[in-house]
Amino acid sequence: MPDPVPTEHQLSDRARRLVEAPVLAEYILAHFAHTEDAWDAEQNPDGYVALCIAENRMMWDELGPKLASYDEVPARVLGYDAMIGALEFRTALATFMGTHILGRAVDAEQLAVVAGAGAVLELLFHALADAGEGVLVPTPSYAGFWSDLETRDALKIIPVHGASAEGFRITPADLDRAMAEAEVPVRALLFTTPNNPMGWVYGRDELEAILAWAERRSIHVVFDEIYALSVFGERAFVSAASLRERLGPLVHIVWAFSKDFGASGLRCGVLVSENPSVRAAVDALAYWCACSGDTQYRLGRLIGDEEFMSWYLSEMPKRLGAGYAAVTRALDAAAIPYFAAEAGFFLLVDLRAHLREPSWAAEAELWRTLLSEARVNLTPGSACRIAEPGFFRLCYASEAPAAVDAAMDRIVRCLGAQGAIR
Image (cartoon, rainbow, N blue to C red; front, side):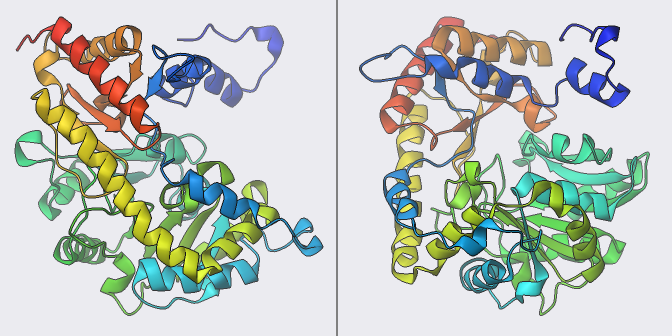
């Protein structure tokens, strides 16, 4: 816990709370603290390896030169434009997303573009719920939803916990139970597909059950489809947009360039919503998190390059699949259990056998041991709001394959030294 803010700094109460209780999770803070000591095959072979960051750097050798080639940026993109994205860019996005993600055509006017998926979620939920109201989020979950929704929107996330014995699957009955037990009014469900951290691809029937449940309850449902194109398994991605001819006013979809295009630093997230009042509310706040004109121009050129897109959308999943195969071979050889994945850049490993005791304190202790002794950072299950201690998310696409190999060797050695206490 950081030291209290001195009163002479004269901060507002809300600023003081942010300083004294940082929004970022401990594993993220640890990551930033160790980046100067990053692994390097020749210069720093014993350096830090981040297997906690869900980024895909496997395609940068192709994406970097391609984005750099769009160097003749027209003067018009340097001026003000619509804060929810230039119409030209949203038109290109509507064509691209309709073809490759959503499974049907959408209008450019139904899209809003702001600086990243986190900004989309914060603005969207600002429009969907008032401070103190609840949002259902199935777990295991992406850790960042809590900061996205609870920091400035002041909402209350209500976890819908899955059980490891049942494969962490969530059913409509689980949603009913969580809603009945909620101590605040529930305004929405936030559902991630493909799933982070499980790497699952949900089938049409599974998604239909989720959507039908929300329709019966007459609450908003937000489908986070940020890994839509990062599917390397046999089951094809199904967008919620393809389940209905129209989304209607209560169904919304979020996507971004950060994952499928390995471009989290460019900050470009997309909202798809047929609710004009929601879009108007998002537009009213977009000034403070608009996506830059230069970014929109370059990304518009990228998705408009049909030949490159055809190759990229075929090659990228192949490289993800190869990375997944390599890390699961290492896990299998070490007899470390995990949940099989079909998409994304990660999988959930089961390290319960290596806990000193079945407690959150023991999970935190194991995380710190891996960080200090193996020099490897994993995402602890507590950050993903898993209801049982001992599970960790392992990300394999943000580091060079040789770095991942080195990290896996260190993890196995460290766990061997740690021993197993059940």
